[in-house]
Length: 202
Image (tube, rainbow, N blue to C red):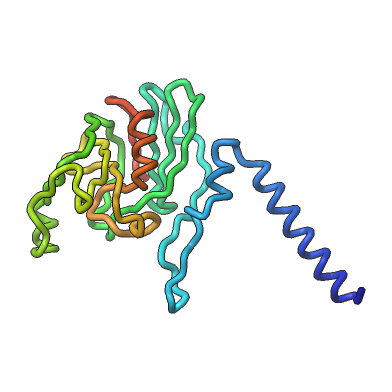
C-alpha cells in the first residue's frame, strides 16, 4: 500500500467517524431527518441549487415562554418547521416551502385558530393580480388545490400552514405567503397541533 493510499484511507475513516459522531449527538427525533434525502439539495442541469433546507436544531425555550397547547416555530431562513407538544415529549422537524419574496413574508406570533381537512382554496386579490390566469377558487380534495389535504388556519387572515400536492415546492421560496409541507407531514402535524397551538415565524 502506497503512502498516498494510506493517507486517503485515513481521511475517509476520519470523515466517516465525524459524520457518525454528528448523528449520534442529534436528538433521536431529528436523526431520521439528518439521514433523510428530504433535506438534500437537488441540482438542476446547470448544477444550480434547486431548493435549500439547511435546517438547524433549535430549542423552544429560546422562543416561547411555555409550551401551552404545543408550539410551532417556523424558521424562514432554514425553510423548516419545528413542533413541540405541550408536555414536550414530542418533537418534530419538517422541511417547508416559504414565501417567494420578503414582501410576501410575514413574521411574528400568532396561533392556530382552525384545523381543516381538504380545505377549499380561494385566491386573494393579490394572487389574482400577480397571476391573472389562476382560478378564483379550487374545491377541497382536488389534486389541483394549492392547500393540499390539510390546513392549519392561523390568526392572520389568509395565512396557513398547509400541505401541497406539488412536492417540488418544498425547500424552496415558492409560496404566496403560506408555509407548505409535504402532505404526509401536514397530516402528522394536523393530528399533533390543536386550536390554540402557539405559532412563531422568524
